[in-house]
Image (cartoon, rainbow, N blue to C red; front, side, top):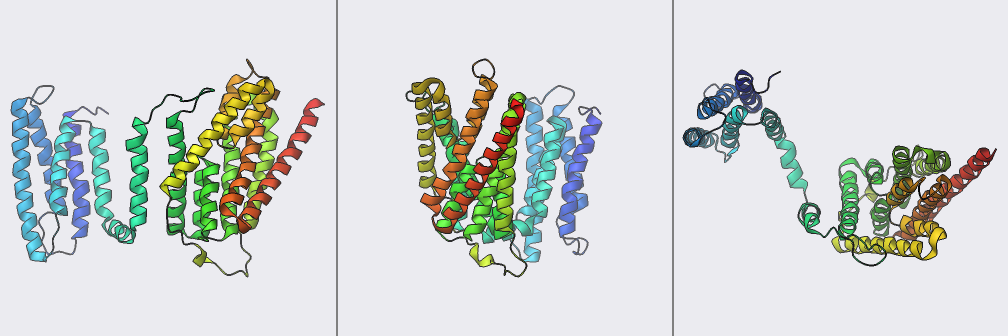
Length: 431
């Protein structure tokens, strides 16, 4: 298919109008003929009109010259005046105050013109997006009505952290022993905030049980430590049942084991023989623990009242914990350099408290030139064990109570299962 064919582009301009007009016509399908400013026919013609205007402005040349630009601007202004006038009269007749029809008409004309002048894929995608927004009118209005100030503020802070602050944060290491990259610390803060916000939204719209588990599984793809911290805070504030929050941490932990397995499988598959059994056994133990905690007995009443997350995340607490993890990473590097070969394991233990992925990637890349497969595998497993044990520390300091006890039991079961699997697999390899 030739996307640059003028006939195809003109058909797309017409299709844009038909698509948006279909939604507009359906919204006012019960209106009497002549009682609405624009329906499916008007919008279809508007898209085609925009296409014709774009074709005239382009002429036979490769682009739009000054004269063509003036003509296109004048045509668009004239169309805007007409559609706005008729929309105003429609609003008066219906006793409403809305600019949706007028704006939709202007967009249809503009997309019709762009279909002739620009990227047809962008024109088509924009038409689909606009139609979806128009069709979700009731859902969007209901969502805005239910939106709280804390949710809006947290979302804006998260967006500002990601799209405003992140690009300007320095990307060069600062400090001794290789330093700490400020952008990496800021990324840790963004991950922590994102996981907490995801958990808040999931619980609010899906309920405690499904929300906590779904948010934990999704958060575990990025950082199980962040999930642990978020759930620990919720447990300390009695926002949800400690057992359910601990089950979420177990799911995130199992996901992190699978994530490390995938990283090693991609970068250095030969290490899987050493770490695969231990990671697999630990993941099974974590999933089993989560199942025991999350699946209630048939005679147990549903406890929806325990799900009352009141704040998506705290900005300063997120920043503080990110700085703490950055300090742990720096300490791990210092120990590694100071103690030499043994320091690699010690450094992996310290760094694993904050980030297992970085250790997995580093060890995989150092094999076999710098480290043997055995040394690299041991370092990865030490980092995984350290990260799992670190969850106990977070549970005890932040979550406390039954949440801390449950996290300790989960971590202990994972470590025992991993150790047994490692010993058995090592013995099998020796034979």
